[in-house]
Image (cartoon, rainbow, N blue to C red; front, side, top):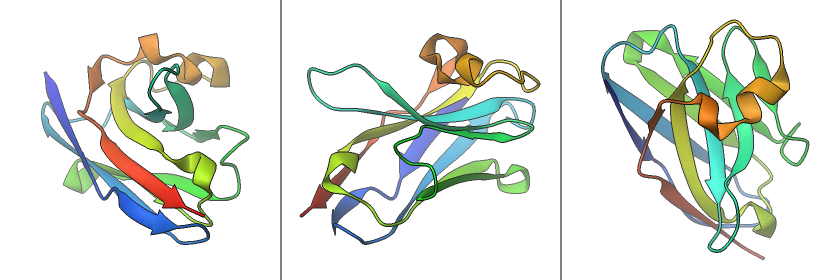
Length: 126
């Protein structure tokens, strides 16, 4: 079992930066892919970014967000720069799946992930 806890969300203004953290406990997550997803009320959960042997990004965040991981700290991060009001959502981190897939569509599928955090709210004001 892996427990995930997100932190770092909050209220920011458009153009600001924010860094989300995803701390893992339990089994080491070194061999898991890590994904960040986001969701607004009444909408489907949306893929944001993933990191395995490489990184993948949704087009909407490419060039603005950076996903990274520190295996020694069992923590993954999502650095969010130049945020926009449309980035407002609850952000979830997830762990699981294959570390070695070369397909972005593999990592954008939320069903690939076995473990999920409780989410952290990010609100971007205009």
